[in-house]
Image 1 (tube, rainbow, N blue to C red):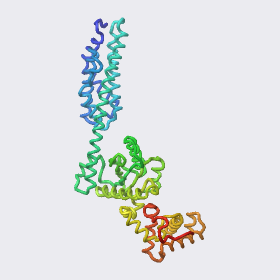
Image 2: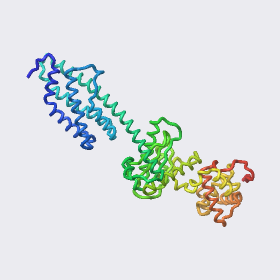
Image 3: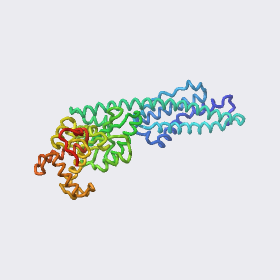
Image 4: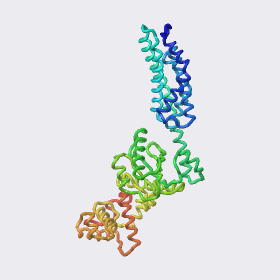
Length: 425
């Protein structure tokens, strides 16, 4: 049959409208079979069908009666569907692909009818068909894309606020409905948790900071062997809290965690709690991470970019009161607590000596020094701190104080030239 109507596009539109019900069912089948992420539950399929239906009805009407481009409005069902996808974390690319599939099928069908146009008008009809449908779908995609992004921003913000509320309840120590908390957080609370605080060294744009936190979270999850998707909740634009769910409690491997920061060269610092079990462990591990962070901040650049609570446990319990810790270091080390180069050598040597079971030979090997040099430095160090190896309590204090100096440095040392300092090697 050859169309002789003065408006071929109007005739094509009428013919497509006559079989629109069958055509819409084909489009729904094609879209759901090719984009499986759109088929999550019956309600989403119903919303997809409603969106396709209203879009096809509107597209046929536009083909029949083209209206000014700036007055074309996306159908209500299309906007509702875009918002629903945003709320379910379905990527916008899936929605765009659905529109490409529908547009291609729409054009294919319309082209079949266009073949019946009288030859003299066929080419011009096809050109107008392609241009008119392209202008329409571009306008619709812009609108549904904007609706998706607005809903996504709002949904993420609201969900983040909701997560912060549940996390605050969990950390407060009060009674919490665990099932509802898990549902809101999308994170299981019955596992072994390692909590972490991640913060940036310097101020960064929000989007850049979020990207860095996400990368660090993924790297840490891999290093820790996290059994599920970590829970990340912002504290502010420069800091986030993260919980990792482990299969079983166990010590954190220092080398693995140190490699995380070194490999990525991220301007991120990390403080980790220990692996703790259940809801109480969720709280306890974060409290430990906060204490580890206090050590990291007090020690500044001396502390590695990744510090775990179990590595600095005694100091973490004392770092909340640096004045008291400084007094403790001064009492335990005496003149050895003075911050100068000579005492730095002596402290480092005594620390290695105690760490290697008071072996002069092992200390000399580790520090690449002559055994006699080690012996001399140990004698000088013990004279400065006025301690005896026979006094177990005093030596325990010395060892803790040396750890404090190693991690925190000037924050707990006495200024150079302090009265009573030992002089010259």
